[in-house]
Image 1: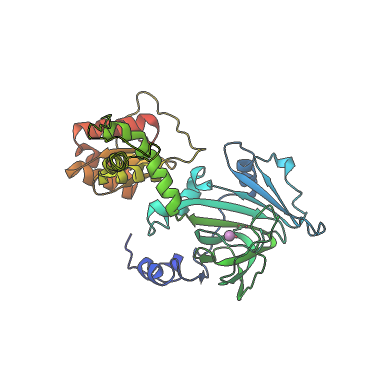
Image 2: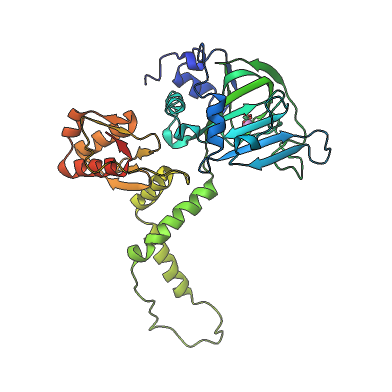
Length: 376
Ligand code: SIN
Ligand code: CO
């Protein structure tokens, strides 16, 4: 992708300018980001997805007549008859990770690859009956809200006070202070940075696609990476025993010896000293398939020929030393690394490119085809 070329998707801004001016900074309303956009997924198809038990879905029902609980939240799956009638106003069905299940939605997601893949979370598709919405709230995500069908009225505000109403089943702002309001039509899109207050209400039935980008938390990353490093620590550090032939007799027996504390610190430093181990843990974590993902293996005679393409459920990333695919890491260098990076960036390799891989790398690609991670 040429990041300096103006994109209709970004209202005529280039990805470079969009990232500089808006990303994580301020909202952008884009009229006809996708001109003549027609929702690829029909309402009935979305309802079918919400009925599957491996698909994460939620139903939000407004019950303003019940003052104590004006919002109800139910977790899917939902049989069609478990959903409220279409004529009933004020409900919303939210279906997560639709990009994993539908190639057209996945292709839409790929239009946003001027943002690193490592930041992408999923495409959530919502269906709302007239007046439906999830209330004024904020997300921790960067999000592109693409109007896919019907109209939605958005109100947004950059308030700093983000207290939530207590006792609600979903995040509802206690004091919403909208500053701008606009109605989005099919093909219009709103970008919001994290923690920007917003409220979208359906004007008639509507569908909205949220292309969401997760920002991992420092604590979450530290915990995840340390857990992975801990699994390898025994092997990395070895089982040398603490020795204290110089230990002198103690009058305060309960005090932890300073040498023992030092021994522990050195063991920990050893476990963490290899920067590649941290990079490896990060790449493996970032490419770990979501819980609901599974791959159907390819037929035994499947070959990586004439070329290969990443399965839409596969995540492939790389750093200076490794390539990562679906939670696994491989050291790569030279021409193999260049070609594997090409596979990750372009999501495909041609037969001619495959032929340039070393025999072991071609073997890996064949394994990935067998596992269903790549399609030939
Ligand atoms: C929706 O699609 O109903 C909600 C999207 C959002 O406000 O984040
Ligand atoms: Co939101």
